[in-house]
Length: 477
Image 1: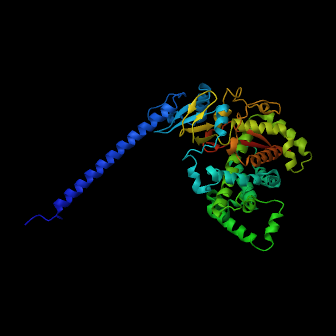
Image 2: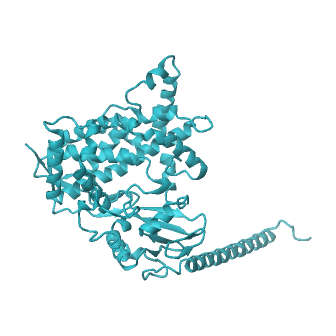
Image 3: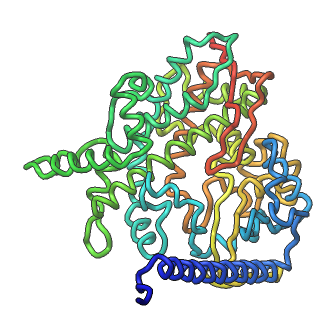
């Protein structure tokens, strides 16, 4: 009798043969990936051979150079050593060209290259695809439609909301002992979140006070994740507007919140934003108007604390404007030139967004004749630009006179809000909040640094301090 075709022996042989085929296919795929990796890296190195590169490890690249929280110190060293740009080798096949020359910045920011894939995508589940993450024609449509939302007539009433949030934060600071340094970033972050909630949703409760309650914890968590809360608010607001007579009432409001403006906005073809697009733009406004502004205010106050002569001059200017303590208003914001100079100088030294990325959608040639092909990923270092000794004399020195009205500088030497068509749409909103926070704080407190805890800036998506920003607050009589 013959052996059955389905006997254990034949099955084992078939299984063994299948494993051999799978192994062979896996080996071929691995070899293909290795060759692909090698050719891609070879192409990158040839494309970037015109630019210098600091010595690096063959596998880890420059990652080992960024250790012990010395990222920014290393960037400053290389910016001084290599004019205009250098090649930054990350682990594996990741290679970036870091730019920090104003002429290079002007060329790239004058184009419409997309952001590098992967650098911001982790934000998509949180904030969706609003202006920060959109590309191409849809970005242009949204940008054009949203620009009127940041007109001065819209921003004016927001100043009162900013004042309210800042004063509540300062009221809490009144109870802090002068001998005990306060970590200010957490408080300022809550304040800017409170402000943005009022401006985005007309939400009138205070995050400062609510955050310890169960409802407050839920609300703060919702602000971080954004989707569910924003969806609910959009649906409620839409339903409210559909009621007879409510549309006219909302249009006549003294202060339209950001969601109202989006609901009334129309694209060029007359269509409105979808609920998904509405949510994404509101969540993007909350994210960009909250975290980056908190970073800016915190570092500005630290810079003034470490430079008391400039702090006092700002205080005297603000006192001369407000006189007997009248509330700060829109009209006061353009009457504090020296304070504005100090704010800008702090933003130069501590840019809230230290870098941005672009992936070339077409070849580019720079003013010095060097060129790059399509597909190269660029890292535009705002921090490197602001600390470039070829652009700023003694860049580590805090000197507000760099921003005096008669000062002369390259159009792309100072880019705290980026530049070109993709500059920060909310830069005026942010500057207003920076001025309000600085002015009201200096009226009530003298700021002193904590010499035992010098902040360690770390260049992430937003510039923060690894060990917090601690200041002594001395109440003014």
